[in-house]
Length: 213
Image (tube, rainbow, N blue to C red; front, side, top):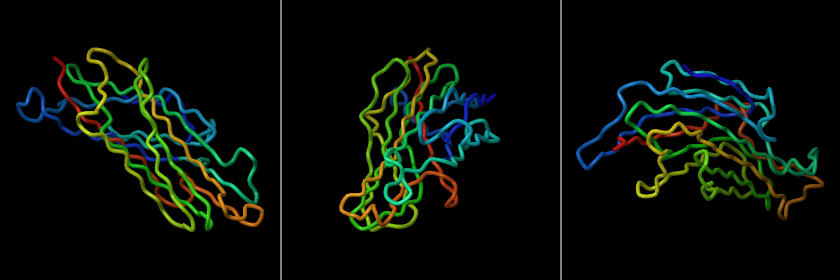
């Protein structure tokens, strides 16, 4: 059962099973379904009550629809609006005998950047009790207006798996940041968002599985 214990931010998050070889014998993947607990959702980009969390029908997917994940500079902005962040704390229960790593994450959103302005989307991932990974960053340069999509991919050799036999939380930190650069913030506004105002926006997490010894 998927427990929704906290809400607060804009995106679709989907957990997809991707097989991986074990002991060089052929692909393996869990036969039973995965369960996911959303423990906390916190940050300036996902304040309390600003998100709706929906469980997928197959117990391996859930959707977080944001209504307030927007970073901006310029007319109508406050000094702190240029940067927004959100931290998801998830508990993915791996079936007995298996462990998992995050192999890929796909992010989508919308941006309007004036000439000379930049927008940045950043994310990092780590298991509870372990060191945070180096953030993966994607930069958009103005002039730009439209949908954006970024993908974070980890090489097989660099995958970090949850320790076998343990049930640790998976933390996902995301950030949006907009810099006015050489644009004219006293006359214009530049922004970058992961909210649902501009249509379907989603973040898809792909898991890679392996059997424990």
